[in-house]
Image (cartoon, rainbow, N blue to C red; front, side, top):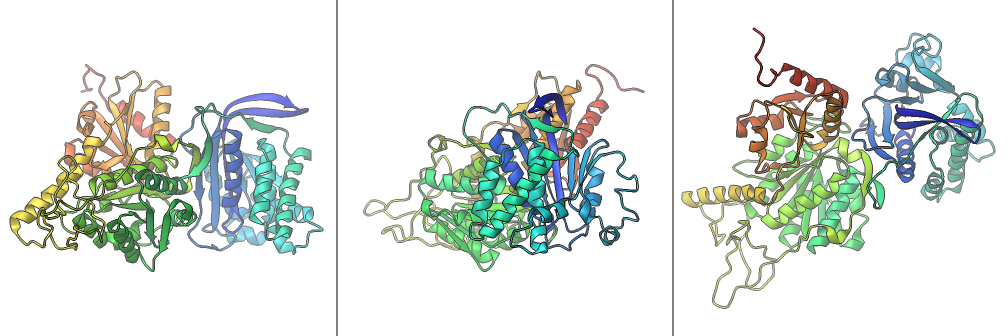
Length: 633
């Protein structure tokens, strides 16, 4: 726990902390994600900086009491700027033996463990392979253990409510939330209002959850089990209006903002798939902003409808994950040939095939770059944090509209489900994406659908049905200017090179790559993309705090690269590229810039920790010969 101080508050000791990492774990059906979401919402309202990491199984209702069925939610909140959900939990709330066994290895010695003692029955212990009760065997002696009978205390608190025992037991997550809210001095009003709203059609259920929540709070207030409570002061964030936001929600809002700033109606054609489905769910709520959502019968139909909407003058969007992107490949190639704007949101997950639907990975970069037949270049944009998904969506739409091209937006499960504070922007200050559609040519002239803008090489966007703009579309190669079918070898070579040149020109409108190198003098550069930003930047801070020098640069645009990337790479003796794949960006960087980049690669379904990256960076720094020195013989 970061920086501690002791204070007195109404006679009870309050320990002031700079930050804390809490992990709540239990069965996937026990409401762990809801509990985490509500604690996060209260923490955001309190004004802390925060970062979250939900971690849950793919099954709708995984086997109860088993290790594969454990669902967890980790929250890191602090009174200062933070970048990750934390490397390890300071506090673990274990609702059953499976949750304890699956997560205890991550808790450092001396950490706090709150255990629901009611669930530690001989049957539950045997199911997860405990030969003896860890609460009695001494296995937890290295930790600060608080034994709380959460289940039975919840049932007792709900006596008098018209619920069965089983129904009453289901409210134990609210009891735990109430206890945590007391323990960390979180406000409660919003949670109580949330319960009233969520269960508004079931007043008895709403009343029971309220009672369980308040009982948990009162238990903390009156028990001697907890000698102190804790307080983490609000963070000193830049002035503005903030809200907590997840990556998928931010991405959905970004698409709506792009629609409003372009004046184009937004059309989403999608098939539900984890972890992208929340974007479809969210956009379906915004018909008042001219958003139309189409839940298609399959992935191919979804992107086909989105491309058709783009042809009709809308901002066409399709969302999916790796398996769905594979099915969409042919239509993406068609969009390249038609040269129409299309935003393709790939919320990456563990693969191949069905893989790990609820776990994160960055293994679709090469698929986005090359996963089509023929020379079919597609720009690629990647957000770096949950809130950055908003701006990445706008940037993807800008490129698609301006250059008349499909664009990949590569998010991942870590960003999609994670959350952080987001400063709500002024819409009028967002980029102007206004579109000029093609107009009928002067009398006597013929419309040329592939006559290009000399600056962007984009072709005209002609709304079907406009008199004088009739033209041919389809997947067969087009003749330059006229768009007629052409099998001419020279024309095909010209069109292939022109489509590539159009994508290359996007680099002219990309900001130069910025390098974080305080004081200069670093010889090691950490180059990242996507969700590795937080762990990489946090690791660089730790290295510098220890006296080391390291530079950090992070790519938003992966195709094309920023124009100055080659020059940036040339400044450093070592380039480290951490990725949640087996080295896909490293492959691209090595091929294009002939740089001997060092990859650090893991595909565990979990984000990197800042501690492991700190060790890797320090190792690279230690390998370098001092400037002006000589290697040992």
